[in-house]
Amino acid sequence: MSNAMTFGQKPFIPTPPDKGSFPLDHDGVCKKSMTRFMKCLFNNNNNNSLCRDEAKEYLACRMENNLMAKEDWSKLGFNNGGS
Image (tube, helix red, strand yellow):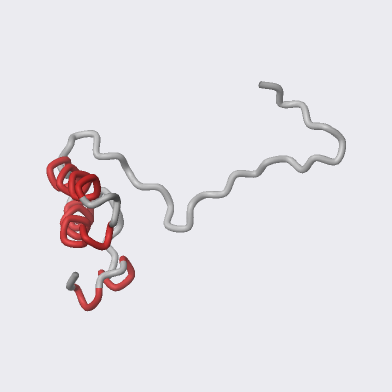
């Protein structure tokens, strides 16, 4: 792939995501909850509204293990700390 630009082309300047990056779960500490969530999505035709409990469990695991920043549940789409 060439790095040369054609006349008038603006250079690509990458921007970080709004929430920043997060570490991958290299040690698999949240693998069980992630697997339950993925199985739920598979079994429900990728309808994530039917997998809210599994999603919350997975996000809680990530927050507890410093794999993502701790967020208020309402900012993650859960009302008053519930599903």
